[in-house]
Length: 85
Image 1 (cartoon, rainbow, N blue to C red):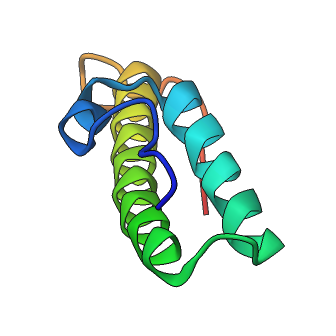
Image 2 (image 1 turned 180 degrees about the vertical axis):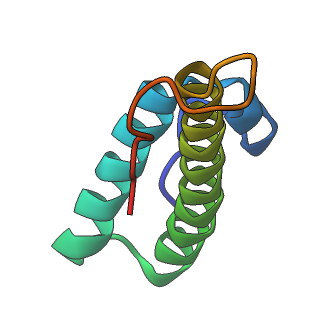
């Protein structure tokens, strides 16, 4: 069985968006190569799903911060709101 990624599952919450995304990209590359054994592939997929959720949460938090910056203290937009869709 291949060695576990550098950070344990519990450490995902502590990862920055960039580090989580980089690890997720590594996992995708390993899975796409087809060289990982079945059990390793399952473990990689599970970690990848957790990393994906973490990245999505980080992006949502960033979007909310940007929206707060764009909306003035009076609740009126001070500029055109950013759209991430």
